[in-house]
Length: 355
Picture 1 (cartoon, helix red, strand yellow):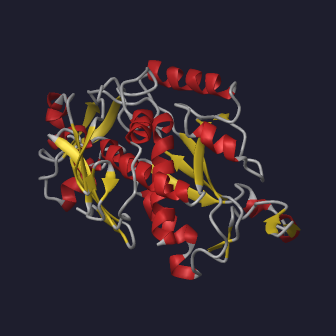
Picture 2 (cartoon, one colour):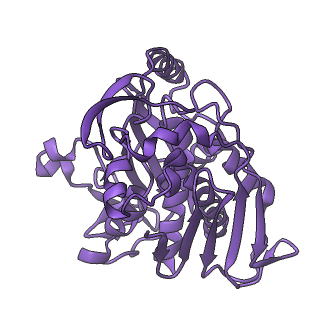
Picture 3 (tube, helix red, strand yellow):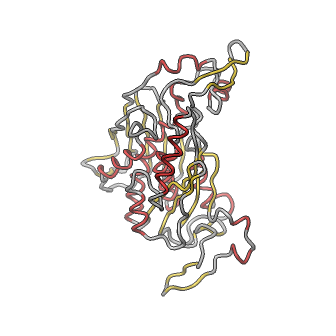
C-alpha cells in the first residue's frame, strides 16, 4: 500500500483503524525547533472522535508518544516518529465485511487489489482514523510556518444545503487565528446552528451528509511554485485528495468558470511597497506560482458511506446479490472533524514547497 509522500518533507504513515496503534514518521524537519506540545494536543482534539452527536461515538483520546527525533522538546534533525494507541475498538462489528462489500467504501476494490487479505475492521489502512497522525505532523508544520509568518485557517463552507459565507479578499490574521482555535469554525456564527440541525436530521434518518471546507493560507511570499507539473495547485492537490472522502479540490473563486475574462482577472495595485490584487478570484496563484495574495481553496467531502440503512450489495464468496446493514460507530458527517485535517495537509504541502 502507498503510505509515503514528500520531497523536502517526507511522510510515512502506518497502522490500521483497529490495530494496536497508528503513527507517522516525518523526515526533513529542521533541527533546533522547540515544539509546543499543548498546541499539538489542541489540534489533535479538534479531530478526535466521540465528542458529540455530530461524530462517531467511538472515543479515542488520541494521546501521542514521540519516540524519536526530539530531545527535551526540541527537534534533533533525525526522523521524528510518533505513535497513537488505538484504545476503543469494536472489531466484531466488522465480521461479515470480509465477504459483503459496503457501498461507497474501499472494500471491493481493496478486495480485488489485495486478494482479500486487506484489514476491513473500521476500514483498516483506508480509514479516516489515519488522519490523526496527519494532524500531528501538520501541527508541527504549522509551528514551523508560523515562524515564517505564514498562517492557515479553514471553515465549514457548506454542509448539505446549508452554506456559510466565503473568505473576503483581504483575510485578517486574527480571523485565521480564531478559526484555527475553534472546534467547529464558521465565518457566520449563526449558520453553524443550521448545520448542526442538518447533521442531526441525517443521523436520525440513519443517513449521512457531506459538505465543503474552505481553507486560506496567508503570507506565502510571491514566487513560490513552478509552472505545469509542480504548480502550487499540483503540489497541494495530491495531499488534499489523500484525505479519505475528499472528492473535489478547487482553487480560487468557485464561480470563476462562469465569469468573463475582465471579471476573473485580478487587478494589481501597490499598497506602499506591497503588491496586492483588488480581487482574488485566482486564489493567490497564477501560472502555478504564488502572487502574494492568500492561497484560497475548497475541498468537497462526500457523505459518510457507513450508514445504518439497509443497502444493496454483493457477497464475493457466494457471487450473489444481497443486502447489508452496516453496524459499528460512524460519523453522520465527516466535515466538522475534517477541517483541521485539511489545514494540516495544507501546512505540510506549503512547508514542503518552501524547502
